Image (cartoon, rainbow, N blue to C red; front, side, top):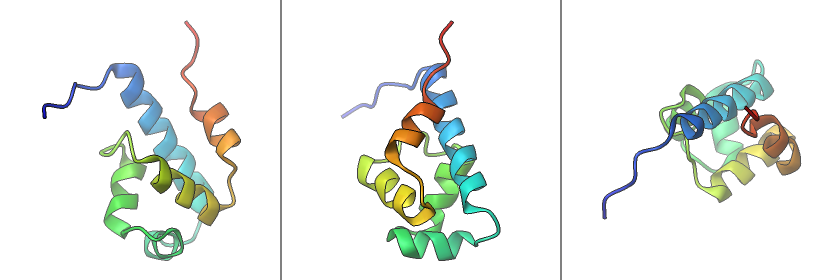
Length: 83
């Protein structure tokens, strides 16, 4: 199965998610947060750097829980900017 290339807006939304998660992580290490979320530190690294701009829903939900963020907050802060 061939994956459709992401649009610039989808990439930007993924980068925004990564910045938000990095900000919420604060001084905690990637390894610590990833362990609490039940994902690998490499997966978290890819999300934070925008190399995985469309992570799975349950990955995002687990990270939100580990970082004390609500899914509603993530949706609002990562929503595309209207043009």
